[in-house]
Image (cartoon, rainbow, N blue to C red; front, side, top):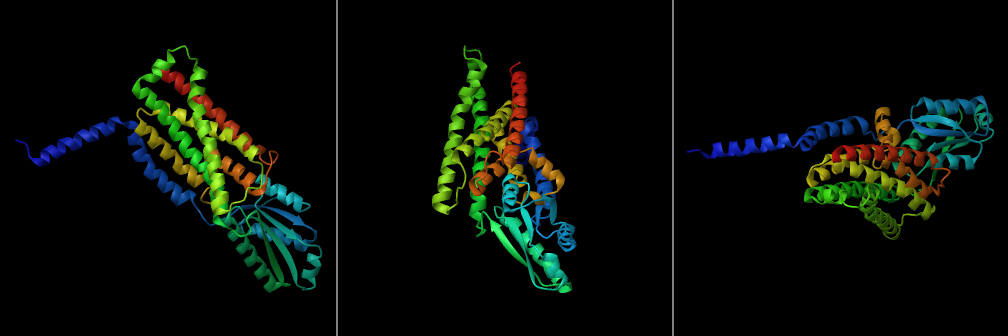
Amino acid sequence: MTGPLSRIGVIAWKELHQLRRDRPTLAMMLVLPVMQLLLFGYAINTDVRHIPMVVYDQDHTAASRDLARSMEATTFYDRVGNVRDHAEIEHAFKTGEARVALVIPPRFGSDVTRRRPTQIQLVVDGTDPQTVGSATNTAAALVASRSAERAVIEVEPATWYNPELRTAVFVVPGLVGVILTMTMVMLTAMAIVRERERGTLEQLIVSPVRSYELVLGKIVPFVIVGYVQVTLILLAGRVIFDVPFAGSIMLLYALAFVFIAANLALGLTFSTIARTQQQAMQMSFFFLLPNILLSGFMFPFDAMPHPAQVLGQALPLTHFLQIVRGIALKDAGLVHLTGELVALLVILGALLALTSLRFRKRLD
């Protein structure tokens, strides 16, 4: 007669055997802790460095050039170019080329030489409050050290697009992309797997319905759901959190279609790998973690190491965050967002090709 410990051992062995057969779940259980360790320990860094900076030098003297080089030497700023006026600063901010602009006034060199008080301006893209604090504090510390050596130099900070540095202005537009990513990927993956579990997917395949009609019929409802979510988030952000919307809502809806399509394609890919709805949900949540951490939604993208930035560039959310924040907060137009749109189209094309291959292989 077997005892309780023996029976418990038999049940535990049976569960381990089933877990071993469930390879997708087992892989996620092993990979997820390592992935979290690498992301939190290596990729996530709130100490913002290498902030892209443009310089508006109205003095063109050795002193003004030395100041710009000194800011680069701190490693907090990466000089990406020069501009000729504030309009070019705005263009650089809207395209994402720069997040900080150093404005050096005329006669700066003369004032420094004669030890007269002078003032420089630091224009910062306020859509990311963490970047604003790091950029402003570093510039103030640098100028303070130079003032002790030479003339009295003051920093006049100017924060654009979010002068009050409200967190809601930064977070709410980003939530549009995060929620779309979570729902579009998970719902699509689970819907296809559910059809397979019920045995109705094969019936649809052998029916007179053409393949593209089947795919479009499956994804159109989710596209509608996606647009409803975008509208609800933007309305709630405006009414509840007083988040401004400065740009074109129609442009945002048009570009959001590419992002929604990319996530739907990814969900279809997951559906060809998962065997059950539970596995499809696990894959979706597994994919959501790097999106939140590496896209720039929670942590400054410029603060991440280069390998993490390369990985983040492969995520659709990274580019859509630039689009939705650019349109909503900066009144960015299509000309400013062309690079992000091209990146989304490339990702969408790659996902569609992968999905097509996976489906063909699965059906064969």
